[in-house]
Length: 335
Image 1 (tube, helix red, strand yellow):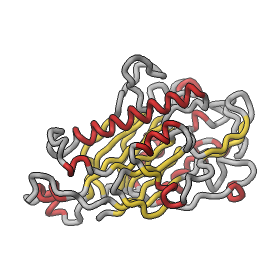
Image 2 (tube, one colour; image 1 turned 90 degrees about the vertical axis):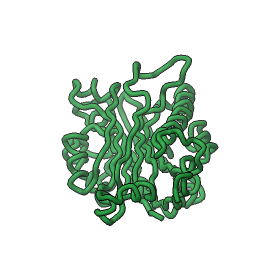
Image 3 (cartoon, rainbow, N blue to C red; image 1 turned 180 degrees about the horizontal axis):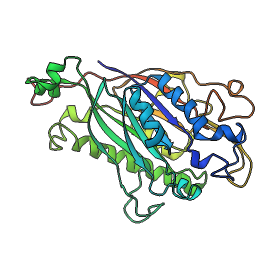
Image 4 (tube, one colour; image 1 turned 90 degrees about the horizontal axis):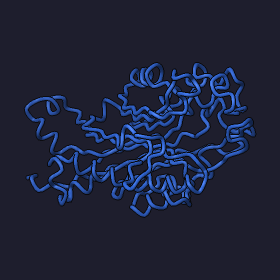
């Protein structure tokens, strides 16, 4: 059985937070010059690399190519990126920055098998219509766990490796942000669409090419899902995912969801006031063992100015969970 460490982190796009780019953002917990990615991004990347996770799920990444991807590649990761074609950063930066979601994986441990970007590109910012084609901004990817013997993974015994190795699906997502009744309704639709797309991707990416949907080994391919859902634990989107048997790592280990995963106090015209809530999650499908989670800071650890701060350089906290994949079930073709 393989143990995986998973990080979830909304890194706070510069195009949505730097006063020089977004004057109405209203972040005052750090001096304006420290809100620049040149300063804050260095702190974010230090924390990510120090977390030493196998899978890293990120949102609000607007410096992927010039900063985040090169740093993560140098640390031994490969990345998958989905830029948001309707990113609000475009307007704030005259098109210079566009944020999106990213999924990084440790190259020495994991091998990418395939990936899926549901409903990309979106025809409009807020898709509407009879068919629900809105799963939020998300990336789904299937991985194999690498064997340490290079002769097996690249030589004549490759079929043995491919048939016997463990595999899993990782997904990262960023749901609609509006804290309104309409926003809750949209997030619930996004959760439902994302779950359907995960099932479709799992079937399509099976070793049998999607034709073995009744095979127990297919239905037991584990799924690890982490994201900023912009939904509190009691909202329909989160309740739906838990009804679909996704288990929250923090709830399972601590007995309840964290008191907060984002905390900001803003002034100005854009969402002024205090916002402190739990909206970030790490989920795992049945049969994945949730081993442990990283402790999160208290209000006193963060300080009265809230986030971001020097120790926690985003308006969201970094979540980290340790999971163990279940033993691979034999398929009909295995000896």
